[in-house]
Image 1 (cartoon, rainbow, N blue to C red):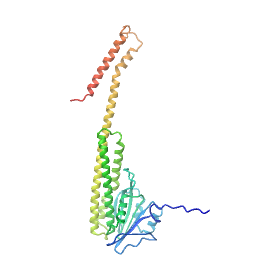
Image 2: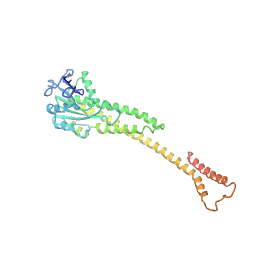
Image 3: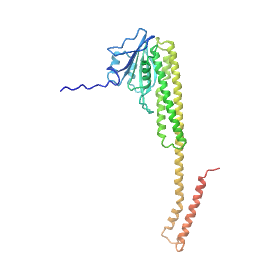
Length: 338
C-alpha cells in the first residue's frame, strides 16, 4: 500500500519563502512576480522590483544568501540580538531595520517583531519572521495598484504606514487609559494596577524599539547613495518628522501612565495606612480590658474589691469608662479638621 505524501506547510509563501513580489515600471501599475528561479527576477527598464520574504519558511534564508546578492550587514542583522530601528548605508544601497506590531497585537510588549530591508536602485528585499501590520498595509496598497516611483518611495511609504499604525495604537491605548483613569479616580483602583503596568511596558518597548537611531539616520540623509533622488530625500525627511511626532505622543502617553500609577499607589497607601490605624485603635481600645484583667488575675493578696459584694461590677464600670474615654479620643482624631 502506497503512502500518501505529507503536505509541507508553506507559511503563506511559495517554495522559496516569497510572500509577494512586484515589478514597478514608470507610468504602469505594479505587476506581480509569479515565482522565483535561480536568481532575482529582472526589474523593468525604468523601475525596480520588490520581493517580500517570510523567514519562518525554512527555504527563505538559504535562497536569500545564495541568490539575492545581499550585503553582510543585512545577513548578520537577521540573527543579531539588538534590533533597534535604524536606516543606514550598506555600500551603495540602504539597509533598514524596522520594528512593527504583529497581526495578533493585544497590547502586550511582546507583540512587536522586526522587518529587515535592503533597498537598492533596482531591487528592494524585505524579510520578516512574523506577520506585521505595516508591511501588509503596503502590500495591500500595491495590490490595489498604487504606483511607486522608486525604491526609496517604497521605503517612505512603509515608514508612513508604520507611523499610522503606531498612531492608531497610541489612540487605542489612550482610550483605554481614559477608562482606567475614571475608575482610579472613582476609587476602583485595585483591579487596574496590572493593566497600568502592562500599558506602561508597552509604551516603553514601543519608544525603545520604534524610535529610529538619530545618528544613523542623519548620516544616511546627509550622505545618501548617489542614485537617491533629492525628492526622495525630502520625503524621508518628512517621514522622519512625522515619526518623531508620533514618538512624542508615545512619550506623553508613557508619562500619563506613570502619573496614574503614582495616583493608584498613593490611594493604595492611604487605604493601607487607614487599615493600620484602625487596627492600632482596636488594639488600644482593648488595652484597659487586658491590663485590668491581668492585674486582677494575680494570685496575690491585697487585690482591691476582692471581698466587696459589688466588686466585679465596679471593675467592669472602670474598664468601660476607660474604654469609652479612649474611644472618644479616637473619634476626635478621625473627625476631619475644619
